[in-house]
Every structure is written in C-alpha cells, then in structure tokens.
Image (tube, rainbow, N blue to C red; front, side):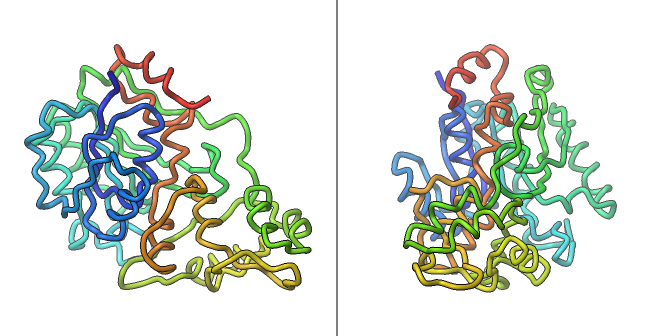
Length: 323
C-alpha cells in the first residue's frame, strides 16, 4: 500500500507532482486560487482537488490517515524582497497549518518557505513554532537547501521545515546533494530555443553556460510576465536572456539579439515536465510557474520524500522511485 499525503497550498502542482512520483498517494490537494485548481485538474484528473482557504479547511475527516502533510505556505511574510512582517502579515498561514496538524496528526510534516524564514528577526517565531510542534509530539528541524543540488538548472534557496512524530524520527535523514552538477540553462533549453529554426541557437547555448537565477512569480498585487526585479533581469542578461517579458514563442530563424523565454521554457527550468499545462493567460501562467516548488527535489533518489515513510514502508517507497 502506498504511503499517503495531503497537501496544503498546492499551487500549480510542483510539489504534489514530485511527491506523487516518489510513490505517495494524495488524499487531497487544497488550494484557494481557481486558476491553480484548474491547472491541477487539467493535468491530473484523478487527484482530489479541494478549492478552499486552508483557514476554512476541515482536517478532522483525515485524522490518522495521513503519512505526510506537505505545505508550500505563502512566502511573502518572510521574503527578503517584502516587508518581512512575519506573524503580523495577514498572509501568514502558519497558524492555520498548525491547526490542521492538530486535527490530522500526520506521521510527518514538511513545510517549504523562503530563505528569509531563517532571518534573525524571526528567531522568536521559529522557536515558538518548534515548541508548539514539540507539545504535539513532533521532533522538528529545518534546513536551507538549493534546488540545484537536486538536478534543477536554477539557483533556488528554500527552507524545509521537517517534523516527525517521535516514534518515526529515526526514519528520516536529510538528503545528500546529487553527485553531478545540474545542466546549464543553455543545455536545458537548447531544443526549445531552436524549435523554430533560430540560426543563433547553438551560439546562445554555448553562452548560456550557467544556472538560472531564482525564478520568481510575484503576487496578485505585484509582478507580471517578466523574469523578476532589475537585479534578477541583469543576471538573466548575463546568460543571454532578455528578462523584461515572457515570449509567446521561440525565436524565428532570423532573430537577432537576446531571446526571451516562453512559459514552457520557464516551466522546464522549474523542473516541470514539458506536457504540464498551466491555466489562464500568460501572466497567470507565469505566476503559477514562478511560485511553484520544483518537482525534482521531491522525487530525486537523493530527495526529501523518500525519507518520510515510516521505516516499515521505506523499502517499498524506494522501489517506486524513478531510476
């Protein structure tokens, strides 16, 4: 029998896809935004997608049924680029997540957030979170990880908060970085850049010899179909990419200059499979991609979720992992 998971703030499905590929069965994916829910349903019709604010979601029917409670909680309360209001920010979803932990009592919890969560100003908040989970019977730890350590062609630092019921703590170990470096942006996107016969594609491939900067999706209030703020766009330019907007198609044969990325290209850099479809127009689709957790860190042979199943299920989970 597969280990089970329930995901909060599921977004466009990056984390859910990785967890599913690692062998877990999703009992439900909870997401409040309609476009994101449409994306999830369009790509995985058999997934149970619940459109709901997690503050209103009832976890009691799932009590005792969940091996892994996963959550990609909104990062804006802790992001360096924001106001860093933390607990005071109305978008802080940690209290709702903790209520659901109490109702569901999963064997393990994984919450992903931005690096800013580890800022000194949030030390009191972090320790309060640890104490709360400890009172519920969980051992808690967190670590800053980079998606590039798990095969993603992008420098993307994220904090993973891991909590396990004490009797399962021995079954979890932090994953080790992959032995090989991830492919460059040029190698990752060459075939997509060349699909319309662009004569400069090979030269661009050689020049785009580094990793992508962090892909950012922005929010409803801020951000559009571009590749981020000025400093980020400058990093893209060093890779030969025009980050001022997102293109509808790859360059044509006579194109001259720095190409823009399409949604499909950005999604590939984020670790999504090429066939993954995003609901809504270009701005909405880009926001979904940029705010997603890349799937590879979840399903990689050295990744996170293979460590979450209780020990008596670990061998079965390893057999389900892609090779």
